[in-house]
Image (cartoon, rainbow, N blue to C red; front, side, top):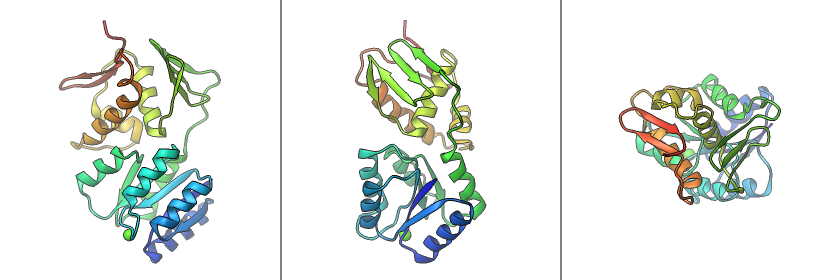
Length: 223
Ligand code: CA
């Protein structure tokens, strides 16, 4: 598994390189946004760990440019526990975030979760109206058109469609898709649903993801 670490603070970058290296990952470090952008576009990685505060091209710009080309999982590091930062990062397509300072154990847990795709069961697939999810190939189509989703968007869609017609609360979604509790900060789930809708619902006449006021979300074919 190859991980790209984009971090301008040398101490933190080396700490991540050594720790993740000892945990068995192949780590490449970029110390500037420009270098990170070059490496992300030239080489294949299984995960990108991205510091938000970078000189030159900042983490947000870099995240945007990565997302235009790839669905690689991105974990971003933010210095403040600011809700706006989390929402912004997730809106730009990051999969998860950590607030600095963080413990190595915490980082490793997040990294493992993001890299764990779990062996999908052979031939498992879901269908809802003209939406098809091929779990083995991680492929989503509507009206036969391929739709590219990030890992978290895929997990969210799979969860909703696999429990068709059932209303899932934001807390349930947060714990199943992110393996974490967002407590009362359900913005994160709302942002992820908005991104998912933009891809799988907005371009099509039939909307499959339903907001159930005061309760949560469900996937179903409307009457
Ligand atoms: Ca920094």
